[in-house]
Length: 412
Ligand code: NIG
Ligand code: FE
Image 1 (cartoon, rainbow, N blue to C red):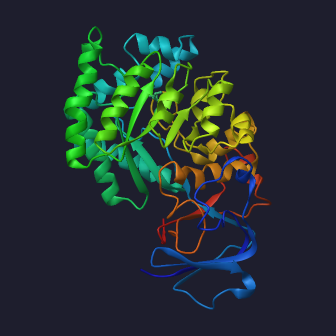
Image 2 (tube, helix red, strand yellow; image 1 turned 135 degrees about the vertical axis):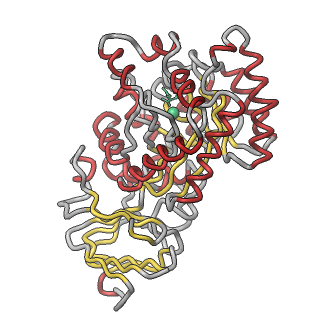
Image 3 (cartoon, rainbow, N blue to C red; image 1 turned 30 degrees about the vertical axis):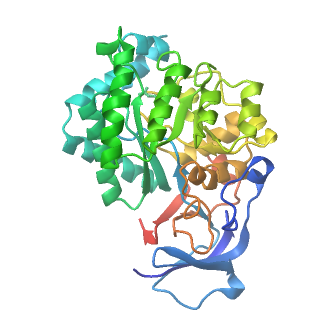
């Protein structure tokens, strides 16, 4: 493993002290920056950084970052990156006026993806997913969470989780896995949902736990998926198998998911497009992270957006993620997520960059090794092209301002 010295950095962003494991409320607007800086990475980790006046003399590789910004690699805490095929036919149905919920009710949506995934070989699924992971990495993603949930049978859920395990083995992106068997009720159980819930609790969970195939459990708590009581039962069972919850809730309806998640000390609650003041109160008084996914309502052309300002101003911990999936967000671009969070959620440029790095890492329990540029943390960072300022990054939406990505001390 060789050392990399990045020098003449116009601005180093996100040099939060190691003790800062998450940024709550107003803390999210701290840039923790060093002007005219250097960063030295050796043997995968950051060994030092600081002002150019203290810059070390040599390293195996020296990169000149004149006029460039260096920031931590993104930590994308919510994706469905393993899927069989894209769903542009549903995109066209929505253009013609169908809603996401209507498409779901007619057997499209998640069930459409499940049919295709069940038929695909494990190797093919792995190859397709790996190509997407490589795209994420080029866009600066250094940590990613990947969910199951397009299998919906014991065999196919296990197949998805094994694919994620293979991705972990070959990639420099740090990966965490969530088991999302409770993503949708399969057609075969339409009139007997109890039986499917029992399959999750009594068949899927024990096998997954025994094989160590997941870090977290996820449930889609929503009218078109699972109720808060059903969510509660699944989380109770999963906790007994050592899986902590990260759940989909409040995407289209507020129906008790927040209370249930916080009761089970969920690491994060994700989506929150529809969120009332009482739920904001519950979140601000908890350690559960509000993971916002602004590209999903954007792509669905849904007027509801998560109340990011209210959450931050109340003192909650807010993270940003892509929700990359074939139905509601066919984009793995964190640069686009941070732009949209400024535009639609009224978060500041500093807030979005922190929410997509350190707080994303916290939403994956990875913030002691990733998410900020601190001595001892992993050397996973982004070097921009020459740019005029930090605010330019989310401002220049759709333009590729990333010049180089370094993951765990390796130039990608
Ligand atoms: O996070 N909401 C549930 N799951 C995904 C969508 C899955 C799909 O449509 O395939 C989401 O938006
Ligand atoms: Fe999702």
